[in-house]
Length: 47
Image 1 (tube, one colour):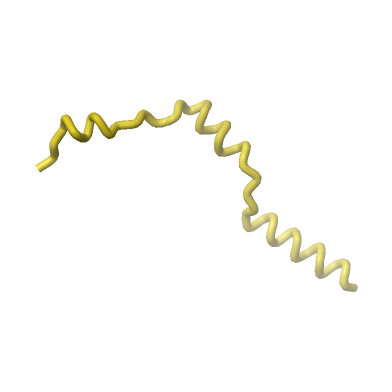
Image 2 (cartoon, one colour):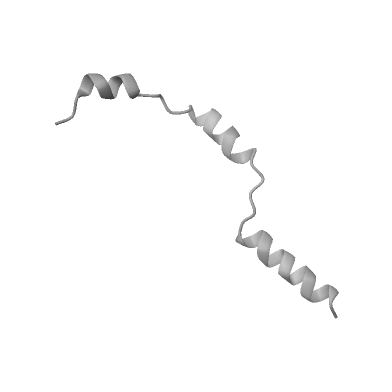
């Protein structure tokens, strides 16, 4: 059974939307598009 008092003690509120967006957008993550662009550059420069 869930002990609600214990769960409430562990609770940490989530980030506000603006804070979450800032955190997400401030990271420079490589995505599939970046990988494909790099592969195309390498292929074209090898000609």
